[in-house]
Length: 115
Image (cartoon, rainbow, N blue to C red):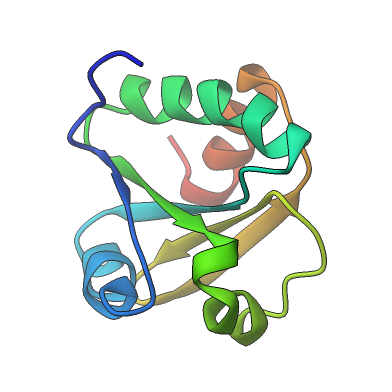
């Protein structure tokens, strides 16, 4: 795997509050709830990462591996994976499920964040 952008990082239950909720007060945070056994999760990851890298810091991507963080998955009442949730100003702004192409993700972010 290539070098990951500093705007993309792994998050778990213990640092979720700081790296997602608090961070979303500075910039939008997209949280990718994924699992290694989930084919659509693996398919979604490159598109999601590409779109976030294009945002050049205005949007950051936090990746949560659900098998290790089931309480977070339960807290956000996730029904399936992948589930992507957009946080801004400390709270959830929008979410989508399933694998989507980069152009769809770009449009979804534009719709919810403007610009």
